[in-house]
Length: 633
Image 1: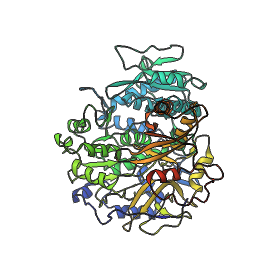
Image 2: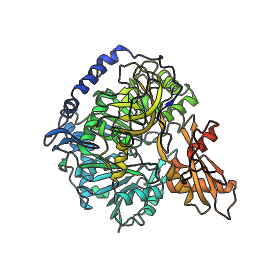
Image 3: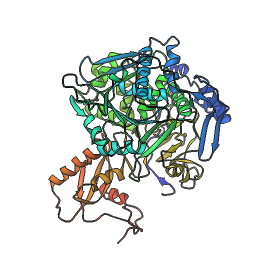
Image 4: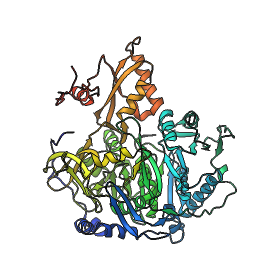
């Protein structure tokens, strides 16, 4: 890890200032004042946010901090679904639309009010109880982006079961690993997902993944194909809606301690094995509620669409828990931005009158590629807030998003945060000057900084390492069954949480996030561990050794290139490249597929045997590899 580095800065003097009315109407009307109030009394700040929610028993202490371990709202009792559902059903939001779901086919739409969602969650929670699921049990959810996925998540939280949602694009091995590590008692899936007019079998993947997963007692299957219904193996499998038959629409919420785990979410790591990030109940609830309300400036009349899949942290925090706690109307879509044509997103925005649109830079760059012709076909005047998440939003994409979609009037909240942080940490709050290329500043409640290896703040315009200096409510509590990996977040740079990202702090205090400092590749907003892809390649009979790097790509942010050494008896060929690509697809899923494979006789390594991926990347990019003194001869 270098001390710091110099970077070419974008034009920091360039900024856009939204109409003053945005600031006048925002929940956070004065960023600087709010931030100073937080710094003066951090615990009081977070207590104010927490008091907006409902608790079964209040806390005795806002925060308990024994570096690097935190407890928030100590002694409090609650259930997050009570705040997502019950409190709305008990007041004027009972018949408010909680969720609108859109599918790919014309006319595919489902609408659930808060009352309807409440009843469905309670019914499925009672169904899970019939299967013997109880507080503390782990439940794996491997489903497409349909309302039942959200119902399953909330039902788990209702009864105190810990959910582990796995993205439906992962393959057998990735799913098996996550099931086994979490020791899931039940797996919830669907027969198929639907993407670009094609059905993708999920149940068959689950059938393979539960082999050698002895903790699994039952598999719950949502049957979507009515004409060719999937056959269930009744000794192990049960139909999703059969489980809900004959049960009450009432299910008393499990009383949870503030620090009881809410969910485990696996994220790629640089050591090969994905990390099971553990989030707890109270702090996560407060953090996601507060940021949804203040970063998006969510009003009761808004129609809000976050395009993320709930298999990722963005879907957990800003499709499910944050917006529902805040009483929002949430849009879900099992849709892709360019199917059946590049107008699919804009059509939904027009038809549903969406006011807040939160998407990924990958999608924005795809929109840029096809041009303004498509969004110009639709009425996007309902939009008032635009958001970006998943990776840095480059200045060109910012400009296009702001002008072509927001018509130079909608504030853009370019958010930086992680699976580990649970909530948004850095952005430009609504009403503040927006600087293309810079995510923004720490939100009130967060102390982010850019530092050198020793933890000393770097000079403006100099690159360094992005860190968080103080604990925050929705921070991860540990890595499941591997607390040493949790401690590394706080041990890498003294006195700080190290995010693993490189960044620059400009002279105005705005932070530009450059990308990962470790062996992760962000492909279309998804974190892919280099070691995971390398392990998948080496598991093929032809491969002796492999290394992968990320290559900058104007659409996806990065693509994956693999460098492969073959075993004796195998020869390079286009056929073998195709076989290896397919092997990775079947092992990890399509998001981890290499776009290029190069066969090599040897890989650059240190004298201790560690592959020097940066040397491969430097050669690929035609740049200086830097210090190679540790490279073996």
